[in-house]
Amino acid sequence: MNSLRLCEKLAREHSLREEEYAFLIDNRNEESARFLAREAVKVRKAVYGNKVFIRGLIEISNICRNDCLYCGIRKSNLNARRYRLTEEEILGCCKSGYELGFRTFVMQGGEDGYYTDERLSRLISKIKMLYPDCAVTLSLGERSRESYQALFDAGADRYLLRHETADKPHYENLHPAEMSFDSRMKCLRDLKEIGYQTGCGFMVGSPGQTSRHIAKDLKFIENFSPEMCGIGPFIPHRDTPFAHEKAGSAELTCFLLSVIRLIKPNILLPATTALGTVENDGREKGLLAGANVVMPNLSPVSVRKKYELYNNKICTGEESARCIKCLETRIKSTGFELSCERGDIIR
Ligand code: 5AD
Ligand code: FES
Image (cartoon, rainbow, N blue to C red; front, side):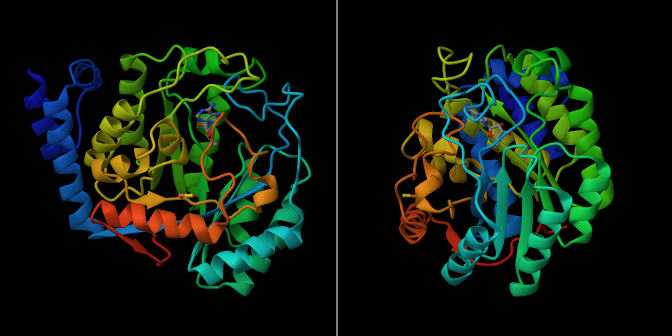
């Protein structure tokens, strides 16, 4: 089968065989990318109209017990200047975010033992009490099922936990021996069963990644059927074992955004900060390829540079209000419009 035929099949059936995904990736060209982007934008419009949802990202701590080989806040990085926001600081971010129009707060951080279920539950219930019309999304890594349940019961609505790669040996090449593919997969299953709107995702162009690996990721997304999926290019960080590996491309990331949109037309798909970092207009390209979410930073400017998963991260010097203005202009330039709704998945 030729590449364009496969594109048509994907648009029609929302599914391909694993080998077909790999073929599509290996044989992609401008023509197939353009076809997929057009189809992706079409289905995205049919579900969500012209809207792009915004999520306020609050980076609550860069203290992490893990040592992922790609990540700038891994525990072995002694150059990282560590910080942890207080409850008051986090609530302050929510307050200014709410005033700016945000109706989703994403609390993201390293796996920091300080954030016990008790502390987090208290924080989540406070946010939900103060802002009952807002969604709370957590992105705090692997926790026990009981913990996920407790945080859900406290009011959390969504959870982002990238699977990183659906190939076990590849997972093991990206992580230290203490971390396991099976426990990552179990976490994702637990989150979904508990009732979270769940997000998985992976890096594009991570060291050792092949088109077969990506094909597995796509098949995993098809089967797991997450409500959200975060993908962005891998970007090397100078203080990690992958310092000298090459970055993933915006081009392949956008191609995959289109594929994922066609696999699951109603998925919430962010144009990530990493995509905007590898190319100045990366996020705009992502939206035009099928993404429908952006996640500007609401963290205090004083900590933004410290939450450095990869080098050269954008927006680290900007006030939140300026970021939103800038994003609004960028979104309008694509012909879409920024929406201030909660932006839940449409079923
Ligand atoms: N480049 C790009 N993305 C990264 N992440 C972590 N380190 C990097 C990097 N060097 C991504 C991971 C993680 C998410 C929070 O950020 O996929 O799940
Ligand atoms: Fe932050 Fe443009 S989105 S400066």
